[in-house]
Amino acid sequence: MTLYQPPLSDLASVADIALQANFPLHSPAHWINCGAAFDFSHVWLGPEAGLLPTPICAIQAGPVVGVRYAELTQRPRYTRRAVQTKSEKILIELAKAHLLTPWCYPSPFRDQGSQKGKVRSKQHCDLLIVFGRDVIIFSDKQVHFRKHATLELSWGRWYRDAVLESAGQLDGAKRWVESHPGRVFEDELCEVPIPIPADANIHLIATCRGAAKSCQAFFGGGTGSLMFHAGNLTNPELAPFQVGCISERGNVVHVLDSEVIDVVLRHLDTLPEFLRYLQQRAILARSGTAVMSAGEEELLVLFLGRLNPDGLHGFEGLLEFGAVATQEGLLAQYTASQAYASKKQADKNSYVWDTLIEHLFEAMRPIDDTPLPFPLRSSLAWLAREPRVRRRMLGESVLTAIRSATKPGRFARALHPSRPGDPLWVFMALQRPPDLDFAAYVQVRQEMLWSYVLAARYLHKEPVEVVGIGLNAWGDKPASEDLLWLPNDDWTEE
Image (cartoon, rainbow, N blue to C red; front, side, top):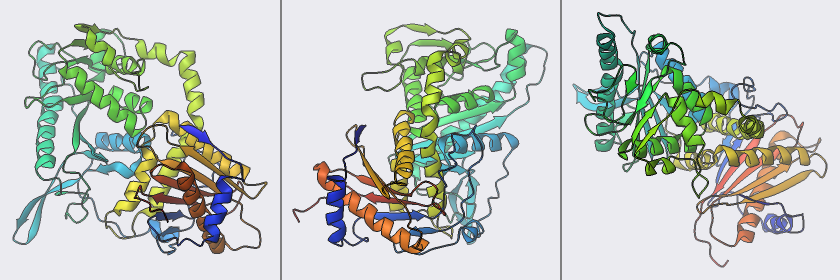
């Protein structure tokens, strides 16, 4: 990602020309205004740093239509009748905390037709994540590890109930999504559809709980996580506390027990990076390479410790070997290293970006239960496509903009795409004059942001999506943000 921060002789001068030309705000751009959604003077530095501030004002989208946030949070919602177990609730909260709320659908239903005028619905899975063309289907089981005559019998029955049953359910859920992508809904009455693409990349995850203590007792210590074996789930050669990853129907099922799901999500806490891990894990499982890992944590460290020429983590180097084995303790070594401490320090400001995503989503959600309109969902997805490393610069750009706008009164910065397909980011902060009321201030800021977006698009020369973010200056009350998405449409000479 290239940093481009021209002085007020370039970007701002072109923006002023656009502003004077009075371009209409309702052209091909899509607007969201999140009034007082987040006060960046109280910076949230990730899930471990504390709760989010409480939004207090309005949302605006398209034509400026304000809705008090108190009314927004009290709007009627449909009732989810699927009973969630304690284990399922833990999974859902982990996913929302690390992968963010907008793409998580807890306990969705599928429409199986109608009978006597009533919808016949059935719970589809325990958690569904839809992000672009990628769909992640979760099945969660909490099964008590019971003692029987032999350890092999105890393990076999737990494995059947916790892992194989989930694998079967995931196979069925995958077939349904492939055959009926338009018949999966958020609610039991099947009134709120989930936007699943017809050509989805589907990932299956079975999370299971209940065997950790027995696993620790068997190995005489350790974390209690199950051993990973690249092979069939029903492989008769699997020893107790070893799990495969290929179902009877040939699908890759990622079995993540209760001891590692939190670990994996903490280290891969953006959807692009988590999806990359699942894709690479599936390739490794089907590669023919014999893999035996002491636990999922060790496999995770192998993934994090390798970069391909494009700068992406993966298992590519491991595929050159006929067999790969790991010993326990790699994760402890990794988290105790200076490199890991430096990474965590560098990541701090990146969580400003996560917070912005969450609050914009809460602001843009429709008051009724209609699905989020495509332009709004697409504009928000641009923010979430950025991996953790690039979120560092984006989060820093947000903080720099609101801090720098306190002296000259306004500040603008553009971040040019670092890879083909990336958007051009425009950050513009405007200090609110003391004699200007809030509604008028927001209108002025939107017009200025629109002008800066047009200017950045003009100066970039090449076709590109542009995402603009409008911000208040540090200390302005109430705090608010604007999000503007300019699609990559063909521009005429005019």
